[in-house]
Amino acid sequence: MELKFVLDFDGVLFNSAFEAYSVCQATVADEADCRQDVDFEEFLEFRGFVTDAWQYRRLFHPGSRLAQIADLPLVEPVEADWAFAERFFATRARIMRDRDWPKIMSPYDFFFLLKPLLLDQPERFAILSTRNVESIRQTMAFYDADVIEIFGQEDIRRLGSKIEVANHQGWLEKGRYLVAYVDDMNSHLEPFDGKVHLPLHADWGYDKTEASSLSQHQVLTIIQSMLKIARPQDSGPNDAAQI
Image 1 (cartoon, rainbow, N blue to C red):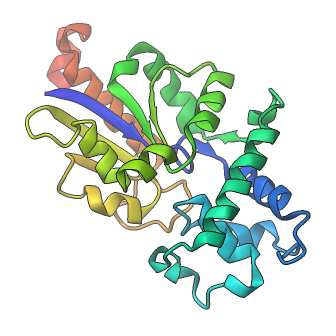
Image 2 (tube, one colour; image 1 turned 135 degrees about the horizontal axis):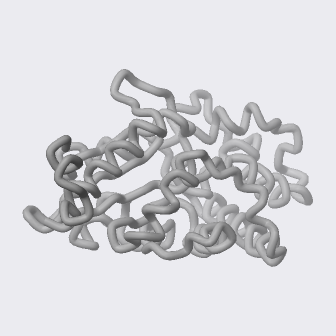
C-alpha cells in the first residue's frame, strides 16, 4: 500500500486565525449593517466552529447571529451568506497582492519540524483544507515548501465535503493507500473514523482537546516512524530492528 499523510492547514500547519480575523474586519469595514466591535477573543471562540467563510457573516451581521455558536454546523447558507463569502475572498485576494502578506500567518513548530520531510518525500503528503487553494499555495511558497498537493475550499464545495475529496482522490480505496489524516477539528475527523488507518487529532489547533488528542511531537513521531517503515532500505540494521 502507498503511504499518504493528509494534513489540515489552519490549526495544524499554521495558526492563521489572526489572518482570517483581519480579512473579516476589512470585509465589513464599510458595511454599516455589520458589527465593528468583534474582538479577537470573540472571533477565536466562533472560529472553532467555522468550516466555510460564509459562516463568518453569522458573527458579524447582528440580525443573523446565533443563540448558540455550537449550532453553526447545522445552519444552511442563504444568498446573503454566499454574497458575504464572495466579498471575503475578494478582500483576501486584494490583501494577498502584498507579497509579504503570509507574514501574518504564524507557522506552528510542527510545520518547521515537518518541513524537511515534505521536501524530501513530497509525494507522501497532501493538504486538505477548508481554506482557498491560492492562499495556501502562496503561504507554502513564502516558506519554501510549495511542493505537495493542495486541496482546498474549491474542491470541498465542488465535491461536498472533505471526506468526498479524499474519496475522489482514491485515498479511501481499500488496499491502495495507508492514510494518516491530521486535523485539529473533531467534526472534520469524525467522518474519517473507520475510513482511514489513522485519524489523528491535533491538540494545538482551534478545537477542544480530548483524551485521544496528540501533541505536535507525538504526531511528528508517528509520521517519522511510518516513513521509516515504508523505506526500510534507508535504515540501518539496528534501526530496522527497533521499529
